[in-house]
Amino acid sequence: MEQSPSQDELTVMHQFDRLCQLALDGEAANYYRHMEYQRNHEVNFSEMKEKELDSIFVMDEYNLDSSHFRVLGYDIEVKDTLLVEALQALTEKKRNVVLLSYFLEMTDAEIAREMKLVHSTIREHRTRSLELLKKLMEENMDGAEE
Image (cartoon, rainbow, N blue to C red; front, side, top):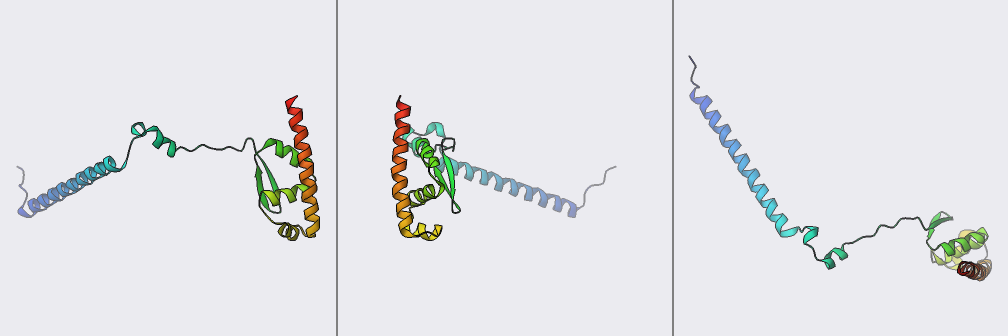
């Protein structure tokens, strides 16, 4: 014959049942609150207008068509292939002066300090480099057209 549970055991079982019921009610309330939040604050992409989609659109850029030059500890990215070819034809000092001047927007005085050269030498390197770059790029453009 089975023994019937004592009054204390019944009380503990009822308390446990009630605790489980309260926990499940709390979880259900949290779930409904979360679903309401999603309805009010989140939108499926399929429901968005094209203008809204365009505002969050991001195009990945890959460095397939760019080159990097390392100058005085700076890494300078040049994306134009015609310019890259012309820069590679320059001597290292002239290329460094052009890159520091036009890509990092450093003044001639700052470049002279960094490269430990005279200010007038930097100006001369920059002037001659630009003339040479123009000539090289025009030649490359003419060669590409033929």
